[in-house]
Image (cartoon, rainbow, N blue to C red; front, side):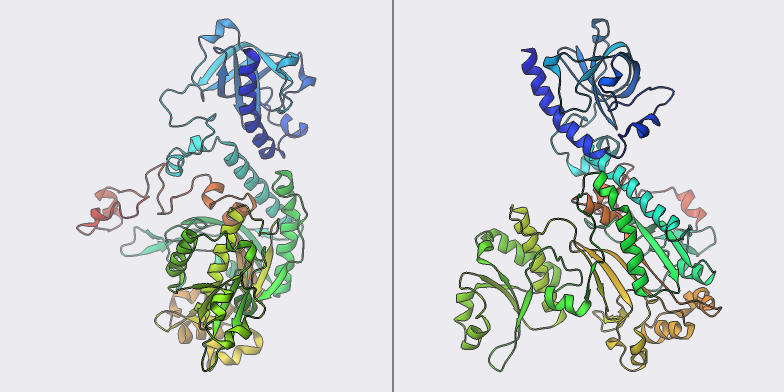
Length: 611
C-alpha cells in the first residue's frame, strides 16, 4: 500500500520536477546556489544531494503537498522540491497546502524502495526536527501549486501572484531576466553602447499609434506617454552619444491583441555614422551572444545561424502575400495572368497530402477569418474543378495535380495578395496544430527591407509606412517632390517565425527634408516637432537604429501562446488589470486638481472594455 501511494505521488512529482529542471538550469550550478544562502535558509529546496547526507539544514518554501496523514510532505521553492519526513509530534500542526514554512532537520538517504531518480533531490530526504509556519494560507484560494489542470486565464490574471508560482511562469520570467541581461551585457561591453534612460512623460507625437494622455496641474495641458523613445534617441545622437541602448517601457492606447499589450518592453538601439548593414550586424551578433540563454533553459539546442536571410518587401508580398512571411514552410503564392476572357488570379496550392485535413468546419472558419481580416472572399476548388472553367486555366494549372486544392482570389492588388497570404498563414498554423510537421524546426529569422516610404489610408491621404522620421532611399529623394507614393524608405523589419519582432530605419538628419515630409506630404503640424527640427539644424550626424519587441520575441522563444505568458503582470485583451481592477474611477477632488470633469453618462462606459 505504501509503495502504491508513493509511486502515484512520485509520478505527479516527476512532471513538476521535469519542468523545474528546465526552468532553473542556469540557477542550479553549485556556485550559483551558494549565493542563495540567507539568514533564514542554508540551502534551497532543489539543492540537496547525496553529498549533503548528515548535514543539518534549514529550508524555506511553500508546502507543496502531504501524504500518508502528513507523515511526509514536500517543500517547494523556485529551485526545486525536497521531501521531508515529519515526526508524529508535528503532524497535527501541518498547515494547509501553499502555506510558507521553514523546515529544520538532518539530511539522510531515502530507503532504497523510496528513491526517485527522476527528482534531482530524489535520493535524499530531510528528517524534520522543527517545522515553523512563516506564512499560513488563511483563506480559501482558487487554485494550488499542485493543481495540474489548466487554469482559466481570467482567474489566473485575477490571482496572478498564485499563477506565477507555476513552473511555466517561473521558467518564462527567469529566462526573460537572463536573456535581457545578456542583451545589455553584449551591447554595452562588446559594442560600446551606453545604456541611457529617457522620459516617460512627453508630449503628443504627430501621427502613429494612439497615445495615453496624462493630465498635469497646468490647466488644459497634458503629457503623453511615449509609444517609443524615438525622438529622444535621435536627440541623443545630436548630443554626441553615438551608441545608445535602452530596455525601454513603451505605451500604446489601443486594445491589446494576443501579441500586444498597452504597455510593453522593447530593446531600443540608435547609432551614428551607420548604414543598415551595421544595424544588421549588431542585432545578429547580439542575438547570437544571448542565444546561450535559450540553450541553458533548454528552449533551443542548435546554434543561431547568421547572417539572417534577407528579402525585399516586394518579393515578400509577391511570394507570401505578407511583409512578415513565415518561412518555416514552403507553400508560396503563384499567379494566373489575366486576359480578355479570364481575370488575373492570385493562387495558393495545398498539396494533396494535406487536403483531407482541411475539414468543412475549418474551411468555413478560414473564410470567416479572412473576411474579418481583409474584407475579401477567398475561393477554394480542387484543380480538376478549377480547370474545367476554361482552356486557359487548364494551361495555367498544368503544374498542379488533380487532387490538389487551389485557393484563389481574382485581381492583383496588394489587398488581394494579402488575402491569399493570410490564408497561407492560417492553413500552415492549422496543419501544424493537427500534428502534421509542416514547419521546419527552430527559429526562422528574416530581414525584410526596401519598404514603400508612404502608403495611402482609407481616405486616400499619404501616411508613413514606418514613421515620419525614416529616410528615403538616396536615389529616390527627388521623387518626393513629384510622386512620393513611389519612394522607398531605408526601413527594415526583423521577422521571426512569421511575426514581426523588430523594426528600424536610417533616419532623416536633414531638417529641411524632415520639415517638408511632415508639412507638405503628411500634412502634419511641424510645430509640434520644433524641438527635433531645431536639433537637426544644430549639427546632426547621419544615424539609424532599431527596436526589438522583447515581449513578443520572448513569447516566440518560449513557445507561449500569448505575450501575457512572459509578462509578470499583464493586462487583458481589453486593456484591464484584473488583479488591481484598473483602470478605475478617481474622486471628484482628484479630478478638480487637474481641471477635469466627466461628462454626464460617462459612467455607462465603465464596463465597455469588457474583460
